[in-house]
Image 1 (cartoon, one colour):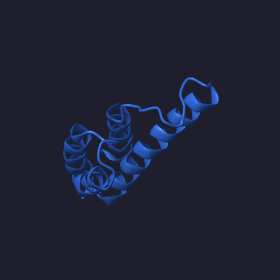
Image 2: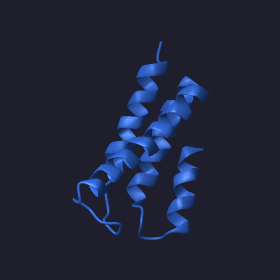
Image 3: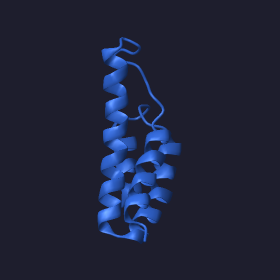
Image 4: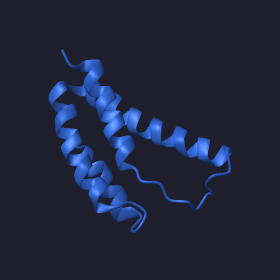
Length: 89
């Protein structure tokens, strides 16, 4: 399901998201889904919140502009890690 969410974004806005992010989303979605719906939702929410907070911080510090591009993979991995650590066990 997470792969589908990212694939739709990749098709809707071509050139703004890399295909590597879409592939990574499929793998992370499998791991988070294995732990259950709560882990999946927390992981996905953490991905978007961490990426958003980092982007807002860069904008506030004037290190980036509205047209700047950021790699999203690290935030995807960090969000998935949060979902796994909170819900594993």
